[in-house]
Length: 424
Image (cartoon, rainbow, N blue to C red; front, side):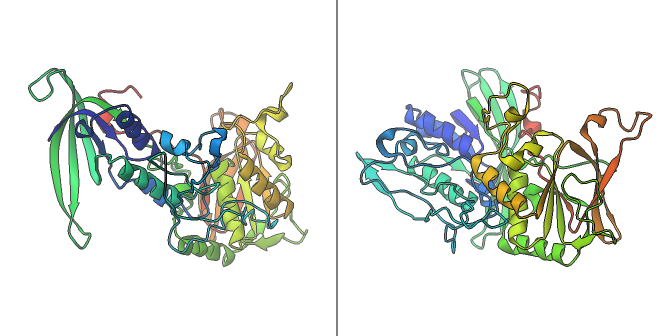
């Protein structure tokens, strides 16, 4: 079959959520197709085990609030007497890295008491699912998504890439008009080796783009950012071995920390300063805090968090952007403030003396010098006019034992296939 009523592109939370809503509303399975370039939930499988959802998953029983991380109305309603939870833990996981800090450690790690468990139940004849962990990990959530796809029998073509999408008038293949989608599928042998690529043209009345963001990191670019001197958060690796290796590289390459200019990062002893294993992270939102705590947990002696905004200075006391301005109300807009779990972890790291905040600075370059890595930062207000301005802004070089880590977010999933349809 090559003609559908609806084709959804992307089998992440958005794609599966849309598909579940359509099927629940009466859409026929035979006229729906989900296309996924990798596998269901693969982006979440790439998360490191220490990376957790900041939005909480609650089993609220009969009180009614929905699970913020669910993509299925049936899951949001899960709870109540006799309803257990579904939480697919990765092999060997013990569920003790939910991001709490009950032990008061400098890295903000520790357990908040959640225990991973796998269970399935039925409520009023409906197979219900709840994540079963207050702050699920990526692999847990990926398995949850696969469970949703299986339960709703969502038709999915994995390992299939969209090459082009074009609007077409009515035809025999698509009488009402719609879209022509050219795809390329990769089949695998029994041994798992990719062995064949097959192209096909599909037709659909509707196309829903749910491409996600994980595959489109906002990585630094330009001649001032030297190859090998910086890395984006999404490229750090997902395994414990990769993160431990990164920490070991830092510990084997101590650098001078503290030059008298770094906010509260002045550790200079007057005789050339202190040499420590150090990481410099650009971007002090959720991913930056997450990465900092993960590195501190693995023995890196010092982390400096740099951000172009000034509100991070208030995060020492759990503040938010709103609390710093005139007439501030203290409201915590989740798009502008750290989540409670990240703020909690950050406070522990700051109190340990192993983490410094450097606000209102922009990183304008990264290089490797004499075996160490260096981030060049300038005042954020000067960025708009530098280097064309006659006045050269003060540059603060920050030495790092490992490549400069950029936690600068992700771009929308722009795709050449959409260029003829969407004005980006």
